[in-house]
Amino acid sequence: MPRFTLYKPYKGNDYKFMDRTIREQFDIGGTAIHVHKYLGPQPQQGNNDPSEPNYGSGMEVDNITNEEINPEGMIDETNIQDLLFMENRDRKYDPDIFDLRGVYNVSDNDFDLTQFGLFLTNDTLFISFHINDMVEKLGRRLMPGDVIELPHLRDELLLSNDRDAINKFYVVQDAARGSEGFSQTWYPHIWRIKVAPLTDTQEYKDILGSANDPDSLKNKVSAYKTELNISNAIVKSAEEADPLGLPLAEHLFGQEETNNEYNHGEALQQGDQFPGNPKEGEYFIRTDFTPNRLFVRRGSKWHRLYDNVTEQTWSDRTYNASSFINNQATTIIDDQEFPERQPLSQVIKPKSDFKK
Image 1 (cartoon, one colour):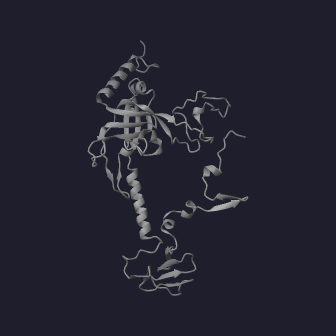
Image 2 (cartoon, one colour):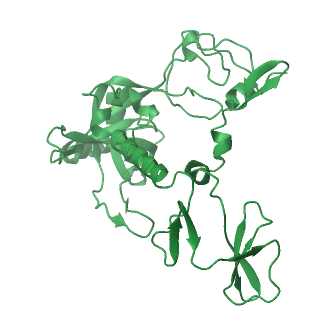
Image 3 (cartoon, one colour):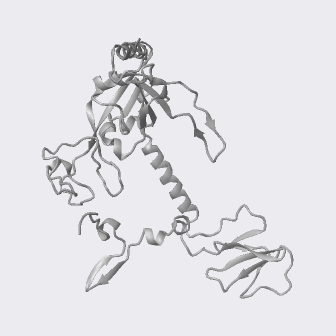
């Protein structure tokens, strides 16, 4: 009598029966999901940088065999725009939108107060799809870079009456076969993806549109204008309140304002060396430090408090290495004047690993 087993080295009728049953479960109980299919990086026109190849030119050469590959200039999801940073900044998406059925567990978005500020957790979703149904409609499985939107999470109760209702957008971050999708035949039927909320970044410009278009999706889902206005207002307020780094001591006891400078009610001792018999809690300014440095006596040690940096501007004290970042100086090399601040990509040219 032959051995009875559900596994076969081929996908037989048992697999097809279970696959149809699982597909029907997704069709009936799943939610509608719109998919923006990722097609690959945008063509790089007029770029001679070897680290950013122009796949659409049809002149792509294999660095190992020196053979011409992709003479048709086809660009697909396997191409990498920037080989130096291994990223695809300018992505191209299919103008057509595909409809799939997916299933996921709905959970509450809890507020996390354990860190500074207010954060939302559980905003990462794990959605399952039927593999064969997905391949038939999309042409391939979902992969990182694809963008999905959930119509059933459409927000129609916005506070602003002049804003349109929008769907919830997510970006696929990871994809793999779901462990729950293997049937008794040991063949997979379910594709599981991990998604995170869509952010207003350069990668999704093809979907969001331009900020100059008032009807674009970018102006509906993004809060970049509001955040930019808030940031600019905070910087401007800080510069007006403390333009030269003078200490703001109006709220401190014993501080008096004289000629836009604040003097202590009791003068602090200062010099180029500490006193011989200090008292506990005594303050002392070392003038031999540049800038001058304030110490306090605690136990058997002089503890450093802070340095006098009133000669610096608000930006210099806030931004790390601001003089280097905002360097506008020039230098002369071989009777030619060059700016001291230059992009790294212009100074260090990338070289091929196979070039001798």
